[in-house]
Length: 497
Image (cartoon, rainbow, N blue to C red):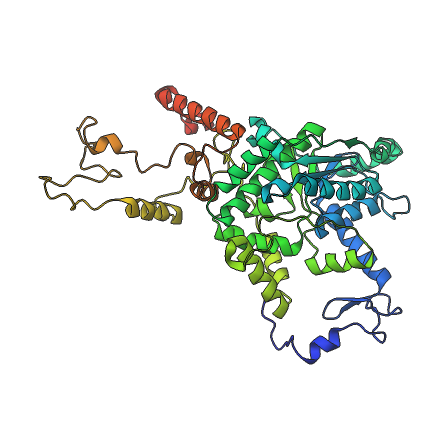
């Protein structure tokens, strides 16, 4: 991050400014039009070629999107997602050198209700984006965020994904696509426009009440991110898309990595910042813009007139310290201004992260909200266990307040005596009746550590969407039933044997 013997102030800044006398570092002929980093000055044509090649290289290196596959582009109207849409449109054009072979569709989630925008304001934003989407010729969907309140419980389940492809499966799929003369790609140009459903005012109030139940902006942003992802996955499944493209840039992922660590999502970093996110099984989230910095995207959009539409968010016009996410973003951006290697260093760290290959099933072993593997089954000597003990001790009342009591009464979180490995024989009249008081509430026991903090910050859990509460009830009943027949079940070790 720190550059030895480098200075980023004074003469160097003036020297980095492009001028007519500075030549492009690639073609060595044309004058430089943009300077991305120190020493990387490109002319207009070479910069466009460099930008397009980086997008194709990211998709080609990972080989997750097969020819003829339906891919849903999640476009929020911001610079990064609109630039991603422009790259897909460029790759599918007739004069493209190496054409993209998947079938794209577009989805926009209208979040105007979360910030109290009027119906007219939201309608104008939707019309502006509809004009941008129509120009691409791709089918598109305009989905209000209020629809998340009517989702089925299956959205928080990890559906069985496609079996792992063999080494030569991608090449065989490409050859088959070329032999068929790409006839399956003809449907990509047939634009289909689904009219947005009418938003009921009662649903908007319910959504605002849900987000308003969170006491801090940090929890509201986390909750909004979870709801948005659930709606994206459900929309992709309903429309038959197996992949969802997100427009997260390198700068955005660097901020997300640091803020996720601060929020206790260290175990989920590989899913939150990696190129692919397969937590939902049959629907994979991909991030093809993760190699681009916000600076590169801004230059490209300005030079080649890529349209974008500003949409206000929860953190718009808020102070730096209003939330952990906003404070982290401010810290990274300011540090990047003085040390240009900041974002790239954090990004290279995220590339080395891998998800744990645990045996999380599609049932209760996954978080009810973020659908990642639970990280709460930790050992007694872990940092998570120490955090829980500290929280329990802080809630324990001092036993010396009542002077009339003849003898000391044990706190609710521990038993007064253990004989022969069993609890004391009070038969429910003392501490044994509350021996399980230290356990988290039923709903929180189904969540990972970070999502527990989010729910803990809410004034009431009853305002959560019905699909989350019904799935929580189903899992709790299943867990209770399993506990009742526990003595009749075979152990896992016996099954493996």
